Image (cartoon, helix red, strand yellow):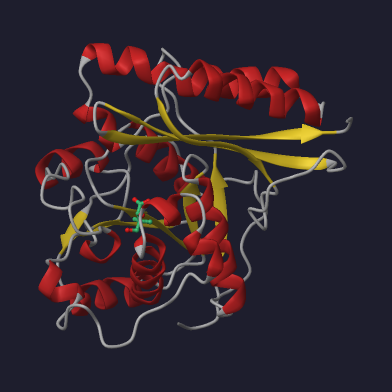
Length: 299
Ligand code: PAF
């Protein structure tokens, strides 16, 4: 990747609102590179696995605010799915995705697996390190190695000035921030707030797997987030809210943790400052995540 010109400061949009450009569908790395080289001004990358919803549109909107051009990648990455996970079943509808972002992004890059990985698994890949073995990584061994490998490739291919990532996947965001810092990738990572359905449920492509009853049950996640935020700024209060949710067991919890957002280490009673509340649970066989950042200023 080449070094880029400085970015405009956040809060100073450079792109106009509304659909204002024609969107090109690109499926090869060579064509993507040709399109990228022809772009003048700043570029934002929105990396997705498709099945786009309002959460992704919020990422696109933020990307449009911050950059002159937006490249959206739409690729279900086999490397980040373990054996027995939902790689085959993962929802895919490229036509619907294109309709949703038509006019909002310059390029949709939707390569075939063979195009992204002529050799699968690749001979050389990227490791997410110890952070990739915690939390989601404990439940999904190798998941984050697959994520950082594809993210590294996609950042090289799109060569953006910035890339936007949602805060719902808080561990993914923290690991990608480490990836960029540790490998000196010349890109700014821009976090975007979680998008929620009117019920409070965090938007996710996997919500499509839930029945109406499952969606109701899944609200235990957002209720727990609300309880933890309501207990801030007390560290004790936040931890008590999480312990209470685990005890009530309205869903099959995997974890409900209060963590240091940068290191993902559990916080103790002395912790002050930002606290990442990270939740994971299983509803009707579907693994769901939720997260929020609280600020602790008291025991
Ligand atoms: O968050 C996702 O959708 C994926 O993990 C990502 C970052 C696009 C990599 O495949």
